[in-house]
Image 1 (cartoon, rainbow, N blue to C red):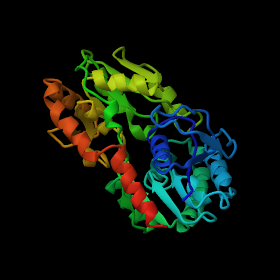
Image 2: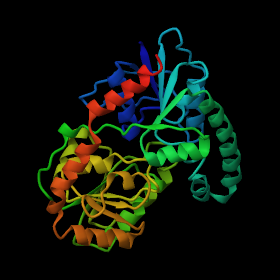
Image 3: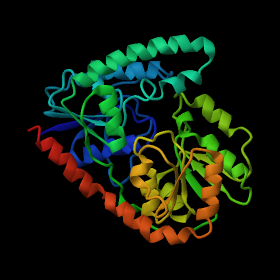
Length: 359
């Protein structure tokens, strides 16, 4: 069966992009997207990416133009099974059947975080945002109504799908390349790996380390160019304490090195969909400090592979002090925990089972 994977855009390589590439690799499928500035996927995948065309590089218009590109695509003569990954690729669902949607999350700016997104806008923009969000919810619901099968990354996201789409979804955890990660040493810095988005609550990390001048933090992650986070990213870069560094986007080899040599990982995202970074850290034998919300509850074993904390700077401070007493004691439990979620072989097996059910 000839398969194709549609993914929103490859303007940067994050968890969603890695899963889209993994889907294509498992199914020997072509990968179709819109904007594609970043074409270097992890070397173990090496998937070529084909673009439907550019999108408008302005927030809101970018998402709408991506949805338009997918809704006007017609590859029905070229493929037999269609996989959608992301938020805007499912707009191709009307024409392309049988299809599967790997849902990373219902669009958070339209559903569970709509109020947060609105509050971060200037007052005079908020009425326009509400009109846009209402319109986009309608078009989103129409697109998802044409989806045949939904799979998703966590039980947390499956519950969101049930709440907003009234659909059931099978959970297939994202793959972690376990062979890529290893423990090297418990170094002299802590690590945070997250795009510079408001919903990642990076200000909690920065404030915690402002209170811990004897510790240091390295933050890895870009702002996604013209995305909604550009003002937030600019603001958090201002007046950084000297013990916090923001590296921006780095190569996968550089990230692997940081995982292998940090003291532990810090995660503060609001109700994270799943969160693959805790598994990458644990595969490197490193403990995880994560807020007690969302997908982190599915990956982090409290007291064994790290700590689940309140979403406050003080919560981060106390966890760093506790784990920092002996971070190496978590090593074996962390590696075992990551292995329990399985790697690419498990992911491919489960994805192929879903595809075979459509044949």
